[in-house]
Image (cartoon, rainbow, N blue to C red; front, side):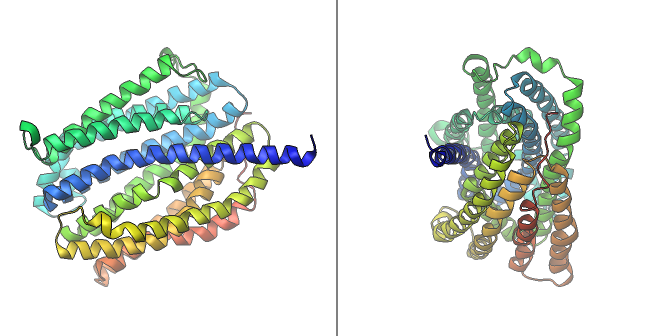
Length: 454
């Protein structure tokens, strides 16, 4: 076999792994976000007040989601390098550490949401009618937090060893159960009680319990890569814990900070009226669904980056990093165009006022542009840079853009210059374009490559 044939075979193997993993993770994310979209659309058809109330509660869920995603990402950064060395015992130890960190965070958030629901939602808006509607939902949905944390850390452990299809199956079951129960409990169909937002919360809680049961069964009876033993959850390794905290703290802190920042953004939008809250909820939910390929690509890039560093294939990694940057840009462009084409179709499902619909259209058009930047910078910074072990840089970069540029500019636009909601929304999303310049310089200097298994 000639050298060119060997190289060609390696290329095919790399791209096959990258694109297949991206597609499966994207499908999983699509189903996960479709659960929120189902709640969003069904409640939007029930009443705009219910939609606004649940939208505020979802900011608390979003904070949890970002924090748990940070824990999972920290697990992947470490575990994928050990997977590159075929050290599955260390992978099990990392899963145990991440699992209990997620449980602790979930329990703290449950306590805050269950015992102080009015205080939590009062941080996001002054509208008492919206708060009252949101409390009905929050008092139930908070019981999903621990199940969500446990399930997603176990899935992150599997993702670090390139097992991703189970995530799609788990999320698929959640979607089916959630939509069916929403239909029964939100509107009171087939003799069920008409519970509105409370019905949506009960549906989500039921589906979260089921998905946790599925992932436990898979780890016990099906998985053959990790051969996970549940008793290992109760034997924490001190050295792994220290390494996890050292490497993972910037990742977890960065994602948690992002969740807090999104809450701050919602608080700014929340002061602009119920229409702005609803329009922001609609546009944000839609863009989450349509950017699943981008997020799937970032996850796949992080796993493969860690694996290649662990296996010592640094030069091959550099070669593919150069090529994939063009792929990332293309993903952003395609997503932006798709969002523009489907915006009217999606908004047709919502029972909202003309004012809210017009504002939602304007918000979505802004996202069509900023998503191009998301496609590039997210993959580069969280895929290559953070996946390569340079976790602190991403934390510092996100902190500077969010707390020193985006939020101050948005607050000034909203409360000092009294700009329109569209201008405020543009300020809130501007970092997606600005980060591209930092990402371009950082990734091509290669100083983000760190070996963490020594």
